[in-house]
Image (cartoon, rainbow, N blue to C red; front, side):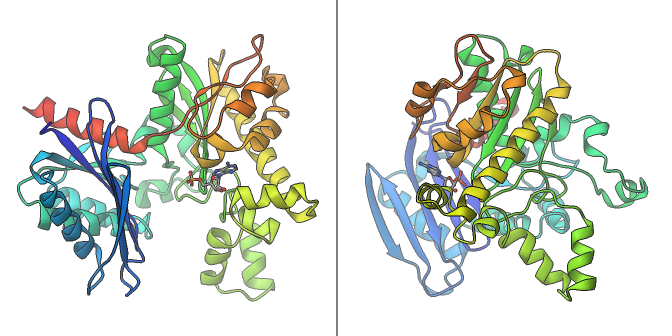
Length: 398
Ligand code: AMP
């Protein structure tokens, strides 16, 4: 197969990659470079069920990681099989609602959009630059996390702020996790044998970052994350919605700097902040089971806020084909799913306990009782969407 796609997801100190067959989603090789920009930088490559971990050399950056990967691919006769590279890019603003062939102008736009995603877009751009250096003859495609939500109507994406902030500075809801919501909605449509364009779903991507999306006739019509990935439901370390007045109070009355508040809301809140234990749902569930009150409170707030978000998005529909759970927590936590569904009986969700217990560790299926609205657990596969869309764009252009 000479049409493999190399999928790259670059963070500020990490680089995740998979070499995939875009037609059937088969993963030929995958891996992760971590602790980049520090002498602890390592790269782990999984190939033929075996994992190989190596230290990276100075300057320990994204380029070193990509160069290591390229040598590995060449050594295993896989370099020639790379047809194109698909990059996950977090923020595409209003310009990008489709997969886009990367050129100098596109890179400039991604750079300009860094002011809306300062933690993500610069890192994505580093990955693009490093991949361009290493694979100079190969097309590079950007798949934007915000793209799927570009179908939202104004009433969903305009904030109740003076309109000039939107007009002059693009301050609006953009939404994220679009690739994941898109993938699971297509999978759910397959499960009920209906074209996705005729389906209405609410999907809940629950991982360390969490978002809920209303998907009407296959298109996103509202989503919980906003201008930045801080709005909406409570997450692993992010607060989600708080009264903006809390920020003034922290700064003016309690003397925190804006930087500190930013750090608190993004990194010290959510499951971690309330539980005072961890941002990891498994750890909190274990502690709650042993009677830890803060852990129980964290799970209760987390599930209530998600249920509330799902219920609020129901106002977009006359009828609903089903609810979808995905992401590390959505795919694995019976407890969180059960807590959420128990608060949604008015929308006719009724948990089937046996099915809920069964649907974990990569299994896919309905966890709602027969007579009620379906609720599916569907493992997400953002890498496959990136590979597929990269391949399709190039095929269209030929
Ligand atoms: P993600 O960001 O999608 O990788 O999801 C990470 C989150 O999924 C963490 O909070 C994990 O604790 C949670 N998670 C993974 N496996 C389980 C599990 N078996 N039960 C509960 N939570 C889980």
